[in-house]
Image (cartoon, rainbow, N blue to C red; front, side, top):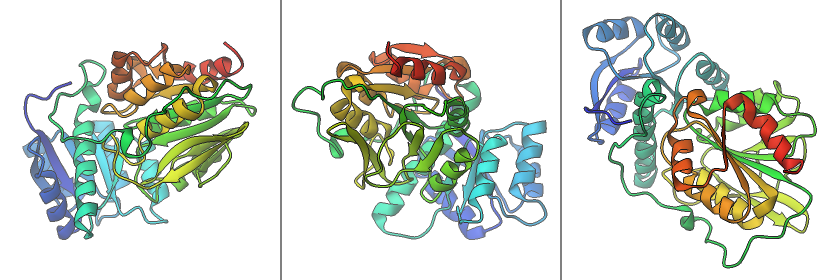
Length: 360
């Protein structure tokens, strides 16, 4: 999908410092225009009436009305894509997860002072998320965004392409999954459908640091299988899903018949850390025919190249279909590159992956 104008943003936060900092960050991107700011939801309603924004960034803890209540009212009466802008403290993470379940598009970390490199990475991620949010309501009707983006690194920055063919097939299969915008609820449905003896699963969901652990805990309480935030050297085993920690790349590795994960720092890859492309390349290199790949809803093209590499190494790949995606960007790009073997609705992905792992 392509906007014929800039993405118009309303910033709602009770902190004047945050409002000003976020405004400065967003307006470094020529495709974004901050049309108004508001110190609380009541002022935000007045701003919306005066000039409807394409996206709202919303704080959670505010005077007069909290962000969660405002989000519920907004989604019920006048839906506009909302990005939660949170400090993501230990106490607030559950609230942020609840906001996603109630219709927020994404969660971002409040901008803060830091090194130039940290600020630049934060700027890129925040601008990308806000631009992605603007496309959510149109994602089922128009092609992927043509908004001009800055140069981005490939998986070469973290893991070189294999010099030889991937390891031979074994009896143990692994599922690797990539998701972004809309992925939190898509992953919930996917994992809730998994049986107790499901194949080992490794997931990259684009999500801020200090948020993935609580996300995994929430899913663990809802699913039959175990769901955990991945730690370095964790084994990939049946009945368990590992979710990449925010701000760390995760790689699938293998030692003999044992699959495990390795966490790495490093630059943004495909404009993300963790990156789906990094996970998928490692799956191609160390898993090959033993892997079933899944790419879900999300803006951009992270995972498309890696999925093609997996297919070339013998993996079987599934993409979520357009009708069930919040944003059809990532699956569409993977399909376009030729890395996808089958396109299915969200509700069919889990049983299809299990069936393939049992022998196709």
